[in-house]
Image 1 (cartoon, rainbow, N blue to C red):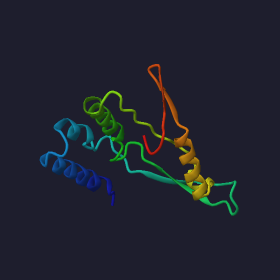
Image 2 (tube, rainbow, N blue to C red):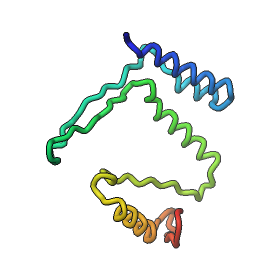
Image 3 (cartoon, one colour):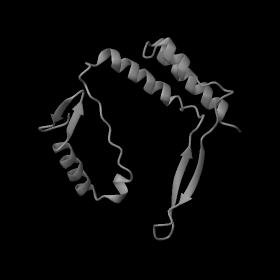
Length: 136
């Protein structure tokens, strides 16, 4: 029994409930609704971790064209919201650390991030900024 039609129906019903409750706009509803002709189930496959003893497998979920791949559209909405609702001098930053949780002991990882934030300096529009303490 193919679970995809039921998943699409449940997802779209949930989105409709959000729309009717005014949690999302009509435009967001239309962007996020799952089109049955364009959706697929996610695929699970494994890649061997040849560098580890016993060669364990790393699970990979390919979610292209699944019922949740409208994430780009959601981020676009967040961006549009932020341009109208955040002050222009607000700076949002992200940090992407590859394998932080498996390659770096937890205590040392936290200390390294703290040190990086303590010495964080930014340049924007000809002005330099240095973080004194806390999260910026």
